[in-house]
Length: 384
Ligand SMILES: Cc1ncc(COP(=O)(O)O)c(C=O)c1O
Image: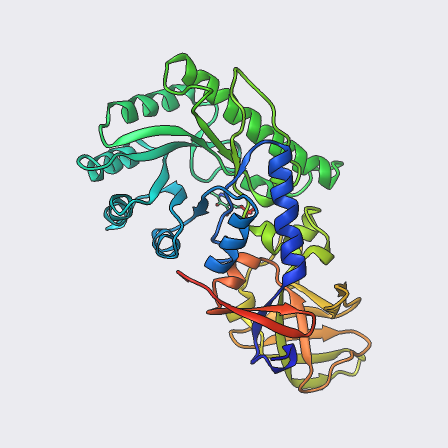
């Protein structure tokens, strides 16, 4: 099958660029002597996860119990949910995975969350938990400065027969905030990553004083894609970061390019749509409407941008169209405006790099893996 024969809208994965991204991140993890536990929510593809493991990835990170079940069913036996697990039935389902032999771990960050986890795992196999630390992002996690609360939570876990404390986990989601005034993009990413690392290592040192963690065995898990592109490791009180958890690095996207974490040529995921209608305005602007709307690109904007992804002039050479912009989306339609006229006719393909690869993938049942102009494979996504 040729790319030109794929029913649109669809998501294409460029195999060569994907492999280059996988190799580069594994090499970075190896150089920094940390395990790479990739976040599978980005690709939702057991086929892709196997490529990560073939290169040396250790375990998988997931965001939901559905993902944990789907990847366990596909044969992955070490799955970390990088979030507190609270909600009807979820802990029971994780317990079933643990009993079936999958190594499951997840985070706790509140007394109530830890209490529920302890209750669910009271009898039977114990489950590994990591205390989630908020190192500056402001989502889940106990703030890194609140060491008394962190110690109290560690003590609660120690007292809970069903739980064992494996280590600490943080997510530097603030790496998406971009540079501060006068700061370069590289310096911003380095700052957020260094802060995350140092804040979590500082908490580990406090927990070591109470005998809750030991440098030889504690797992210290950090990361986001923009951050880990600037990750370096260091030792504090005997502790080092032991694993990084990027997800988006497999594909990158327009947001990662804007942040300076990747180049457009690194983006392995593109959306292909077809021009279904065309209009020309008096000011010379040409508007084409494509069949790629919110239901594939999603409504995700990136900070400071008015467009929904980057329109490509050439997919083969990954060159951005100098003028075409996706100015609006409805569910099944995309507005592509080109001041001065464009190159599109009705029936033409329009290719673009989504703003946010992970949410785009979550809309699709299939990913078309392409080698040049040919479709090499079709991968099914799971747990959408
Ligand atoms: C807890 C957690 N860890 C890791 C990641 C991976 O980060 P990224 O998508 O920047 O690669 C995410 C992404 O949302 C996350 O929420």
